[in-house]
Structure formats: C-alpha cells, structure tokens
Length: 386
Image (cartoon, rainbow, N blue to C red; front, side, top):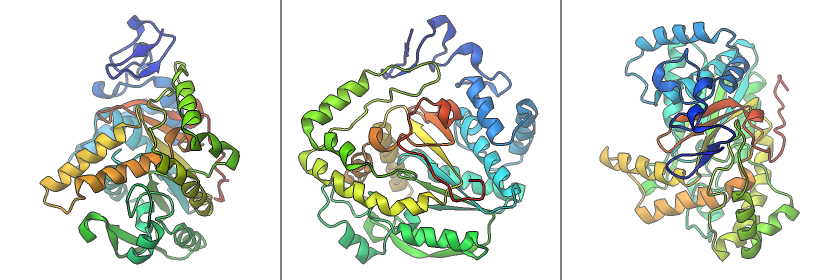
C-alpha cells in the first residue's frame, strides 16, 4: 500500500499503515540511535550514505557529534532530521575529501530556497571548529558582470537578469578551479544580490588555498538534452501528455518518485525559449567535469521552491535588506523552475540525495543510486578520484 501525506504526495509504497509513521517512512526502519526528533527517514539508506562519507561506526559517530554540537553557539537552526540526515553527513564527506590529500570540488545541487546558503554558513562554522581547510562558493558568484548579464538575458520570457543558464560565466569558474587544482591560489568572485535594487552584482573577490571547495547552485550538474528529447517539450499537447504519464508513476519503498508536480505549466513563449536555455547548458559541461562528487537536495514538490524563496525574501525585508519587488521575484522563481523543467533536467547522477518536505525536514537520506531517480546522464569527473 502507498502512504499519502497531507499534501497528497506518495512517498512510500508496499507498506501498511501500521508500519508507517506520520512522515511516510517505515517505523521499524528508523535509526533509533539518532536523537528522537531526527528519526524521520529509513535507516539502511542512511547507513549506506554514512559509509560513503567514511563513517564506519554510526552509533559512536552520533555520540561524538552530540558532544561537538554542545560547544557550537549559536546552535544550528535546521530541523534535527536535516541536521543529522543531511548536513553532518555532508560535512563528514568534506572531511574525507580533505583527508585524501588531493584538492577536490564537492557540488551541492538544490532548488532556490532550499537552505543552501544556511547550510554553507553552518559548514563554514563547523569546518573552522574542526580546523578543516574548506572554502564555500556558489555558481551565483560567477554571474556575468552587470552590463554583460543584461545583454545576455535580454528579451527572455521571465523578464529576469539572473538565474537561468546563460547568466553565468562557467568558463571563468572552470578556469579558476583548474588553476587551483594544479596548485595555484583559488580566486573566487563574490556576488551580492542586494546590489542594484535586488538584481545583484559582483562585489570583489575571495582568494585562499583551501583543500576543498564546496560549490552550490540550483542547476549544478544539469546537462543539455539531445534535440530529439527537446521536441516533446516544445508542443503543448506533447508536454501535457508527458506530464500526465509521469504523474502515474508509482514509488517503491526506497524511491523518491513521484515528486509532483512533474512539470510546471509553460506558456508558448516560455516553451519557445527552452532550446535557448538548453544550448546555454553546453558551456557548463567543463565546469561540471571538475566535480569530484555531487549531492542533491530534492523537494517533495518542486512547487515548494517558490514557497521557500518567498519566505526567504520576506525575512530579508524584515531585516531591512534590499529585496526584489514581488513581480520580479515571481519571475526569478519561475525562471529557475521553468527554464530547465525539473523532471527533464534534475534527475542527476548524484552521489547522495536528501529528500525535503515542506518544512525542510529530511524524509529520505541515502546514496543517489538508491533514490530511484533515473539519471539524466553520467557525471564525468576529472578529479583524482575519477
């Protein structure tokens, strides 16, 4: 039997209600050695993820981190399920890569509003506490300079000046990373989205000699589609048929699908621009090849990204920061969901997948191949780990 949570999402199947908790995961499978509020995800995939991150004794690991966290002030604000299911395993993976002696790039893919910036801030604090030489950056730091970006984004159907593929300088990012991996200093531009009335602009640079770069972005790892696969997206009838077919897919006990809505509804003008965004992705492939590994934050519903981003913008306004007007914010959110429709571009060859519910709680945490997501294409790495 399938379990449907209150928002209508099927997250597990083949289990009876007596075996399920309120979050739709098998009660008996919960890792009872975690703090009680964190027990929202099944144990075995989580153990497998910890093994990838070099954790061989999970129970001892939990006790060690409980002690470490008592010395961290302020305390992490993430829900315990996300802290234990996502953030701390990610930090352990960072530590493992640092200990390898090679220079690595660990990618973090997640939709806008998923909490990537909050995570990076926490990783920075914990890395400092553990004396780990880690740098954090975002694909957004490599947005084109203001004048170039306005020209590159001119005429797009969302009316945005940042967000979609084509608004970044992936060649600059790849060159900076390649130089650093050959032993040079890592130089990253910095982007402040508060500038230019919320449109953002570059604001200097950061440089250093870390052992690991943690790089985030909503389109990290996305590959261009072959022309033949683009055709169904360009017809409203084919688009609707594909959406209907995808929504009928059922999920197994350890699969993340279906994560609905599969496709946002696109206007004719937005569909006409899909080949343009798709072509822009080709320029990002050399940058993706620099990734040693890729982790993905994946929402139950792709529509959650809109809610999360509007919540973040509301907080920005309360703090007195420069925020985008509501119509421009709507365009930015829509551009990140519709320029690369998630069901076509976000099925990544991720090393790890973290499934988030509407409250950003972790409902599933495990290796990407066990997540039931059919990869769009293989992630080719040029790192020392292959």
